[in-house]
Image (cartoon, rainbow, N blue to C red; front, side, top):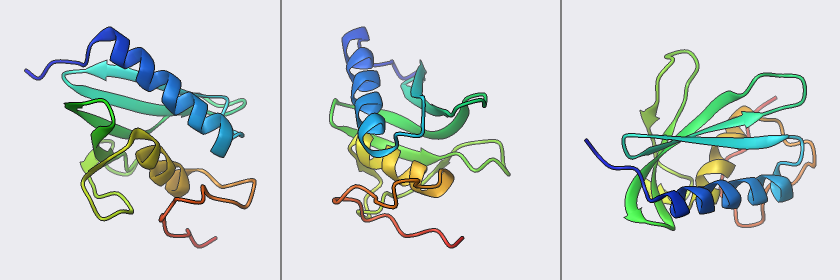
Length: 122
């Protein structure tokens, strides 16, 4: 069974994702991250709602590079996916932006300047 990253790395990932969410997804109260079997499960907490799954990150052994899987609610499971960069791995922030672009409306009207995520039709 794959191992989770060390506690210090888990803490660092939680901080990175929450910092990024505060800057780019301010309508999310928090990003929660739980770890199981080498995966980090990322969920968003919105005001007045229970947390809902966004994506799963696969630990690659490197702090800045994680595998990416989206959570389509219709299948109630995670599916490996590629990031807007066209790669199956990338930064946690890139994965968060991709998932939030798909699942959360962007109340600021601005995506992160380095985001390549496609716009979602209304």
